[in-house]
Length: 88
Image (cartoon, rainbow, N blue to C red; front, side, top):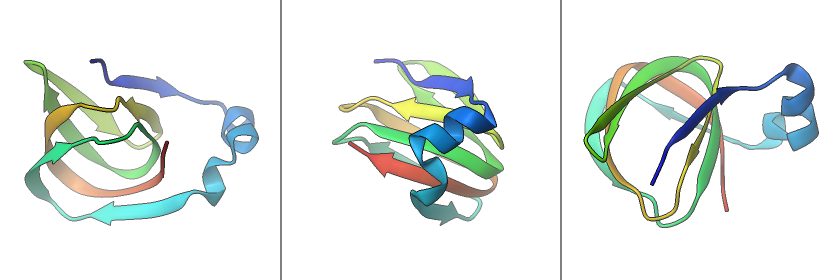
């Protein structure tokens, strides 16, 4: 199971309707998480390290991230997060 991180153009963000998605915020913290469905999100603020499958992935402002269904991970929120998100 792979976490995908990429940059989207403003055109892609508009085409996908991301700016209409719900917003989630989180203070500096560390917690376990399990994805029972696929999540796509665009980080508007913050910085996190997500640990999964013996890998650490840094995610920050401007990153578009896809978390696969069935993923177990640990979120380490280093800077307060604000993101648009959508579960499928």
